[in-house]
Amino acid sequence: MYYVYILKHPTEDDIYIGFSTDLRTRMKAHKSEHREWRLADYEAYASETDARARERRLKYHGNVKQLLKKRIMRSLEMV
Image 1 (tube, rainbow, N blue to C red):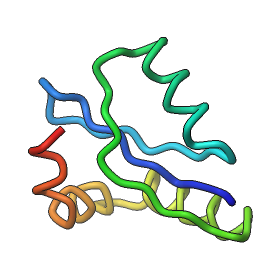
Image 2 (image 1 turned 60 degrees about the horizontal axis):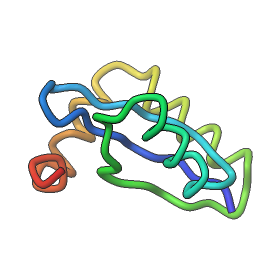
Image 3 (image 1 turned 120 degrees about the vertical axis):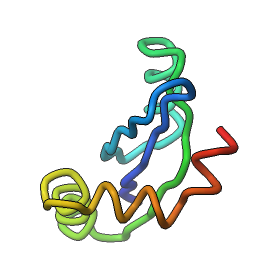
Image 4 (image 1 turned 180 degrees about the horizontal axis):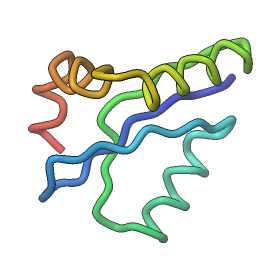
């Protein structure tokens, strides 16, 4: 599986969007590198091409981050 994931910083109004083939291992790496970030949401794909395209759309297309924040607003408040 291929994962696109969204991390939320607990004290700042910021999210991080990433890609991984092993979400658990990547989360462990994030926790050791940047303790504050928490997993807010993720999407799983069978196709690497689809996952990378989704990550690019979320990262680089205009107001997609704002729309994503609205969609997962309650999840962002919980982490």
